[in-house]
Image 1 (cartoon, rainbow, N blue to C red):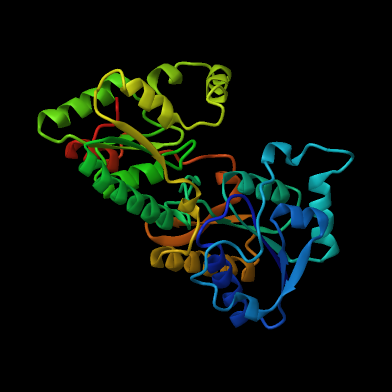
Image 2: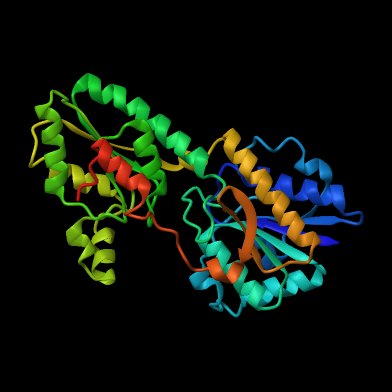
Length: 355
């Protein structure tokens, strides 16, 4: 049996742990096995850049972040575009066939899973594993990397909390989450943030200002605002997609937190500071829970391979690790449910969502 494996898109803390779980399970149960690791994600598959892996390559990596294979971003929207005569999809199919692979395992997020599904629809045996700190893969309750990102964002907010309290300042902290706000919601609640701004719940600056004023009236002269990078105002939500893109472009790369800080300055005399957690949210080593879930995902992926059950995405549903057809998930995002128990409980606690 010859299995190819690649990691694609933004990295996260549990890629190595997942590969270890999958490969170790295969080595334990398959006699004639060869693992081929493609370097730098889909680029390695396109250009035949790979290495034949040894069992020792997967030893001692369960607690190591990043990816031993390297990764790169190959946007799905460009995957079928022929550039300078180079057909990316055909190149990947030819590499697969040339190496006589029995299966290709893809560890990736939304865009990477769409590309994996494209290859599956072209006849390749594909197993996909949901990698994203955003926990936004449709069809699964959990994606590996998510808990580690929550831990990092929460710790960051905890440290901001003490300096905000000492100086009686308003802190607006950007947390990763361009289209969905799962990390921001979880870290915001866990750290005791006063305001949480999510892409799924458009805010009004007046409502945020009112929440700050309410705290000041009760003697609390500082405020922590956890803000997802994709947070959007009600006015922006009413724009067309093209109009909104132009407005974001006008920020020239600056975070939305600067816009919010500028607007809030008209409503309060308190000092306002902004801060950004940034890429550390997907860096460093995986937390124990992520190692556990990543290992379970990897084991299930190996089981699917051994049962010749291809075209599947490994998922977690109600704490059970299973699989669904990849085509059901590809191209879909799992957004924060604005009417979820988690959101409603946060509201009961007194957290403002700016709406």
